[in-house]
Length: 166
Image (spheres, rainbow, N blue to C red):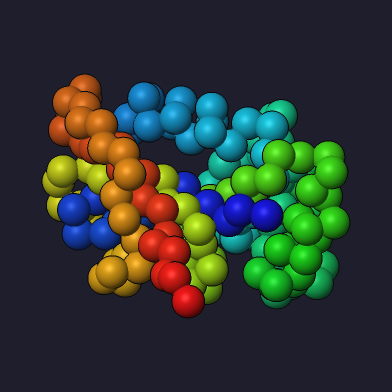
């Protein structure tokens, strides 16, 4: 099972403010939807609530410590570990790539086990209260880069974890 982060952040690593994206970039939203379509998408409760409903054509998995939390149309689990174990049991029904879609705490908890990172960087600073972690130096290698300018300058990056030879 391949674990991939998919995120968009500003130059100063902001991914959200008051549970919303501080920008509106239709091409990035389309990229997110196209990449995760048909896959398992794991996210925290706040990220799920910011979407308003489960995203169609993917298995939405919501992580929350609240045992009474209800998320109709999604699977609710208590931890990252439980979500990944659940994803492992579903590998026959879904492609091998499992996506981590936020938020900041979930990204932090899973960066050490991520195999790939799809990161859209918006070339502007934003005020925010949720952040994407800095990629550890030497652990990821850029494998793709696509610059865009509409509606504001941004870049799609893909990073793969560097595989060390034993």
